[in-house]
Length: 285
Image 1: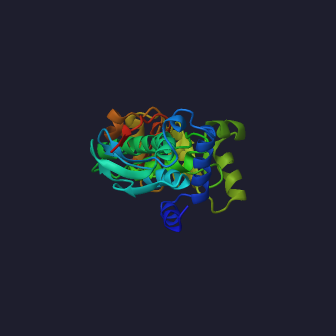
Image 2 (image 1 turned 60 degrees about the vertical axis):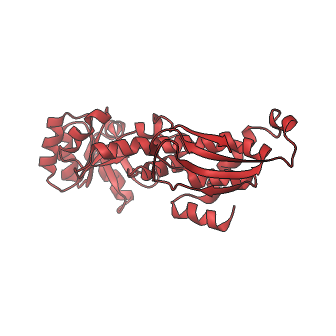
Image 3 (image 1 turned 30 degrees about the vertical axis):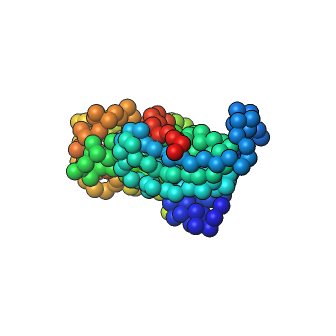
């Protein structure tokens, strides 16, 4: 991988080695021989093509696709940037190289581009729905193994913000923690005793739990499956003393109604676990 591409991946918050490892895994999955292309094309045959958006959306994963091209010694020119709103018919990347290599790269690059752009596009719809409110859309840990960093990057490309990256960087006290510990207070104090400066979020099913979380010192509260009235009351109770995140059963058509209750975030696992791919294709020129 070229230093320039490494730098762009690092600047995007991605680990270049991890991305390259993922690409190598994808190449290995396809096996050592392309039994369709190799009988048809000689090693010296060359091809040029364009990766083109076939519908409007937000693109994500251009530098990730470029890792695929560099791995196969394909020349490329990016014509769109991650986070850019693109329209149907717009060329995202142009490529040139051995025909066999271009055809080997095609599906791997498209798998990454379409998936990540789909997440970015879905996120953008939520951002648009909540425009004019203070609320931001946030992802979750509902990601595919090995793809979390890329999927959360795509959320950022779409204008969303990331929740914790794993179990190591932020605590989230959920209902099972509370049930096993005996109370919100017991669970919170146990974590705070071991990690004095760690960010801790408390999931609350009731307004009574919200009050308990505030009393123990929580500065981040997740409102789980609450009604609009309950969310508005939670905002009133908290009165700026903690950030509030709505979660559970949220849908795009309800996004603005939730946002105007005054919460700070909407937690949407569907951004990563259910986003439809953005239609992108490779056409030889």
